[in-house]
Image (tube, rainbow, N blue to C red; front, side, top):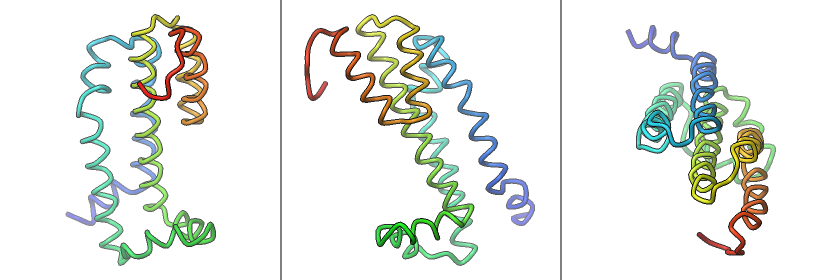
Length: 157
């Protein structure tokens, strides 16, 4: 039974499900930021639990395959070690989950903050698209735009 589960929930399948699964969430942030759907699925504990469950499953697969935790910390020793880690589909998928969850969190925060300050949906949507593709660059863009909308400069919220 465990072998069937591993075959069905392999890295490629999980990757595809994650990518298709987050699209409705980003569309909801862009077009319906204050909807009940956004509140339930994006702003609640639902996503962190979902991403954590997938993360734990993949880490368990790494342990079953004989990969050690020590190898994970090799990524700090140089870019070559990071490249070696990324050659493993499971490690690459863990980093991808990390990336999309952080970007979605940023998008959720920006969406709520933009609603609070009365941003137009077009500007907010543009910034959310930039965050989807570039993460921190989109956040910096939002902060610059926010200075003009909020008419104040603050290093923290």
